[in-house]
Length: 275
Image (cartoon, rainbow, N blue to C red):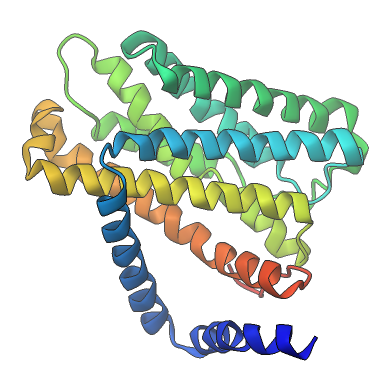
């Protein structure tokens, strides 16, 4: 028993050291860690499009975990209905664009994820409505959707033939970046996080990291040519996509830190006063 504890002491010391640092130091450590991981992934994985496919697959797996929770435990406590509805909205928008412009593996993954998300929404709104704590899920949807609509109208890939489709795609990208905020708000209000909910949010964090890696590596390897693929709108669109990915990655980074710590040390996951 003592041997097991001692083997974990270095990790525990690392977690404690990071936790005690200022926000600036944490940010530097986070960025440095991200760059190191990206460098390793760049050497290991040759086709970086796999990162985006993996991101969507991990998101789908996270939704399956939620569906399993609802089917097994018959309760939706700890879940944000608003996050699920925002997720369904951006998935529907992205699925439409995928059907119109691509029809590939992304189309299948988005369809599967949307299907499970719709089932989760149905269970929360109808079957398990009595277990849904609406008071904790009090972040207004319009405050998240409206800015994304405005951004999508102003900044999107430029195309004479399909500009509206690209606006819808941009809207999906922006909304996806902040759709998890109501869920984090619910967990912050509740203080404690249920295991299935924690696994779902951790899956979102991993998915966003893979998505962020996809864009960063594609931009770095294209040496600027990647911007030209999206016409004149690419000058603003690509940086906004990258910013959206980075924002969501950092939104979920703090949660992933606490989740990893709780898993390693067998602790009950709890949230600090601010996320």
